[in-house]
Length: 127
Image 1: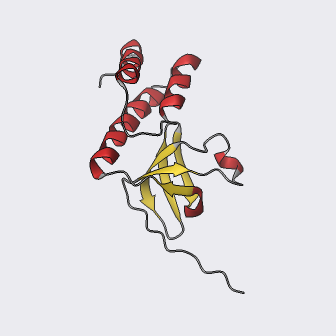
Image 2: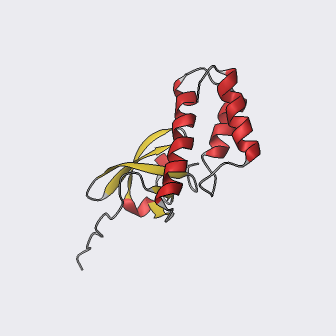
């Protein structure tokens, strides 16, 4: 029996949930959100809270966010990545960023916004 590949229907900017399944490279990433920044034939490259990963489409689950919600998540991702790229984060700050990268909603609560803003201020990252 011949296997047929499902076409890749993901779009750049779409927010997906990572399904780690049997992929050791995705261990600890299951449930995290990622933003599609490249669409291949059978895989996507997604930006996550801790970097970019190329994953097969069977390791992605669409979150079906509205375009405005995808933009909100993109803003959160940009802020997290600016901090991560500063290269000088202490472990507690990294733990907060990891928690934000695992949110199951497309927005930050007031507390989460304040916490992220505090970390940005401490590291001199302007939002």
